[in-house]
Amino acid sequence: MKRIGLTQFLIERERKGLVDADLRLLIETVARACKAISTCVDKGPLSDSLGTAGSENVQGEVQKKLDVISNEILLEANEWGGNLAALASEEMEHPHPIPSHYPRGEYLLLFDPLDGSSNIDVNVSVGTIFSVLRCSEDVDSSDEKAFLQPGSAQAAAGFALYGPTTMLVLTVGDGSHGFTLDRETYTFVLTHPGIRVPEDTQEFAINVSNMRRWEPPVKRYIDECLAGKDGPRGRDFNMRWVASMVAEAYRILSRGGIFLYPRDSKHKEGRLRLLYEANPMAFIVEQAGGAATDGHGRILDLRPQALHQRVAVILGSKKEVERVTSYHAA
Ligand code: F6P
Image 1 (cartoon, rainbow, N blue to C red):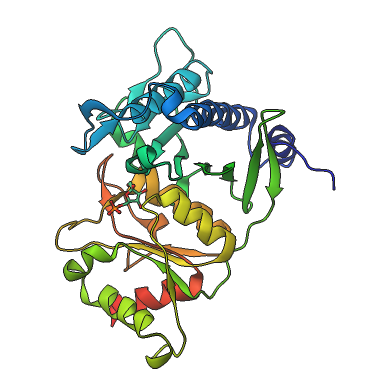
Image 2 (spheres, rainbow, N blue to C red):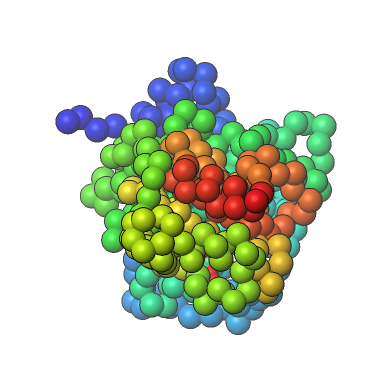
């Protein structure tokens, strides 16, 4: 079977009017940066990039050296292309304006440069998540308000997974598609066109150590899964928790499942970031036939109030997400 690469995939979408030349170049640049991050991750202890950077990010989380390196790679790759008005990163408190000696474009790029980075020192999969928004010329792109758009306004979203193979999952609004990095040609090759998330699942992912803090609807859902054949669901469930959202999302895209990081008495707003994690993943999962809510409504309909806002996330196989959401309404 003849496989196509990311460039051909994007040019075909440009011909159909789904992306313009600027967005195509932007996605290709992000993909190139992800390849560079993948190479750094791959070197592991052979480079000096493992361990902590000795700093904290805006969320008060300890930054790993690779968080900082990945952030730099994405910034350097993207700021000069002329297709961006500004960038925002989970690792930076404020938006990063495009230096004045470069032309300003009409897109905004948001990213979590190294999701799941607590896993990096133990050689478990990590990844990069990104989201692209539009920004009209009259908007001050250095103001974080420019970024406070609902997820439904995303022009594109994707994530790279640095696992046994490096994968890129991408949507520009016509389905979600998976690419595998061919390390010989250094290209992303389309290997998973038109990904579909099975509607039903027997597998859930949640950090059970937070169980005592959960709200009743989440506790009810997980209790019913744990009761298995003997409970109201009448079938056994399996559980996974990688603690890398990119790995959980890729598993769900591959074989179905549900991922929950709900709000609880410790994480009152939720744990994950709306703009860097929840929105892009919700776009990708919906485009693959799945669903994503915060327990009450569709994630993509939420109106962001702050750049680093956190949110509860329940995403994956449609029927299971709808079930948990209905428990919140009960
Ligand atoms: O937001 C970063 C992240 O590492 C996610 O990728 C992951 O789902 C979650 O945090 C893991 O959380 P915990 O530390 O509670 O397992």
